[in-house]
Length: 168
Ligand code: CO
Image: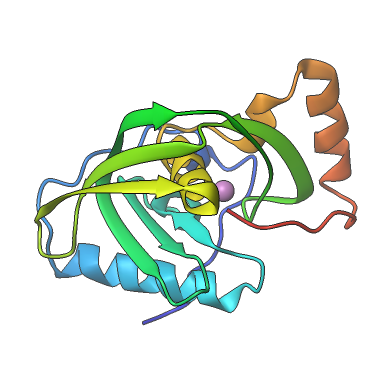
């Protein structure tokens, strides 16, 4: 396993639509293991999407740091319920926290490491992380949730080290 380099805004790979995984092979499993190790190497990090390490594939990893870890291949949200305002940071958009409206609960469908289809219900932080990481797979970043004026402000703030919040 290895800690991978994090690609940061405005890297192009963060804006691409990631492609679906056709076959769950050793390369994919290695990437997922490395994603977990990369999360573990960053204290505030609880989730990561493959484009953040420069790989444009539909892979996400979640480590809530409460003993639960998830590796999801081709994740799709099949149900959303409720609303929840969350303050989110991102290793790829460092030094800022953005308020984002998310669903309170989601149901996500994905393939596990054995290639089996799994449906899982998530709520609270877990649900937020899943939504944030799937946004990454579609080239969407937290700054996209702010209006143009606020976005300008965020982009100026990127260069200062001020805010610290949970990194998704
Ligand atoms: Co992120």
